Length: 85
Image 1: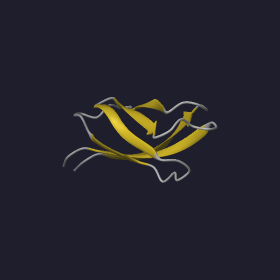
Image 2 (image 1 turned 60 degrees about the vertical axis):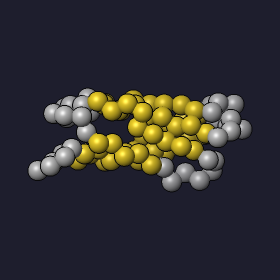
Image 3 (image 1 turned 90 degrees about the vertical axis):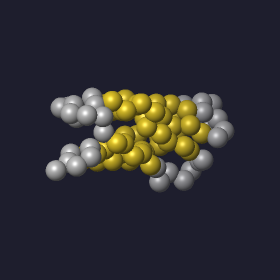
């Protein structure tokens, strides 16, 4: 009795930058604001990923590095989106 969505978005961080973000839209939109869990198994640098803003029609995913990137990076972020039963 609940909706669930799993996916992956790749965030590109430019050399010299410490962070980036992406927007993931839900179509159709959820009936209510879902719960979003984000994670990454990227181990090249210290990266913190968050679901910065969650709405029924989408989520803003952010990635922050502890230090500026020495070279361009592509960080894979896994998302699990679900509604309460």
